[in-house]
Structures are given as structure tokens and as C-alpha cells.
Image (spheres, rainbow, N blue to C red):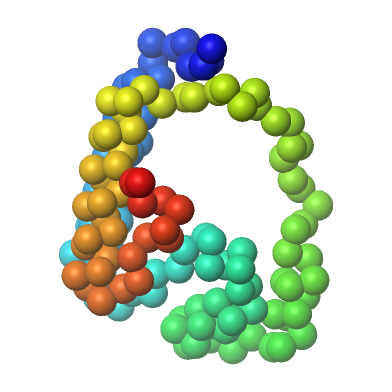
Length: 126
């Protein structure tokens, strides 16, 4: 049996925040003059190279010691517990997934049209 979220406000939350996320990205792509797109997953995989890229983009000076300090403390002291949800937990209905997937594809397409790297593969609908 698959457990789902039983809250009448959940569908409205999913709808409003999924559309907010997409419109936020699309507005930056349309109106931003100078942009650097950084995906969280890229930071997780290659923290120092991405930070160096960000520092260059922002045209600021940061010492190598400061960057290495970030690398050495990448996990930080404040982490959420890894309490596992049951394998059968599914917060999204099929309708919600379809809606979210449309926004994901729209944002991915807009990023690629502006010659940015698209969204990470694990975000794209299968």
C-alpha cells in the first residue's frame, strides 16, 4: 500500500510553488542581463571548481585558504537527521507529477535555449 499526503492544502501548495519556481527561473532568464546558472548537484559533485567559477563570475577576490575552508567544512554542523520514510511513501499524485514535469521541461528548454546547461538528468521526467 502506498502512503500519500493527507492534507487538503497540499495540492494548492504543490501547484503554487511549482509554478512559482518555474516563473522565477523564466523571469531571470528573460530579464537577467548577466547570469551564471549553478545547479546544487554540481556544487555537491565539484564544490571547489564551481566556487571558483562563481568567484570569477562575480569578479571578487577570495583566497585559496578561504575556498579550502569551505571544502573542509562542506558538510557543516547542521544536518537534518536521516530518518527514512517508508519506501512506499509517495507525496505526489499523478496529476501533481504531470504538472511538475511540465514545469521542469519548460525550464529545461528555456535554459538550453539561452545556451545554459539544462537541468540535471535526475530532474527530467522519465
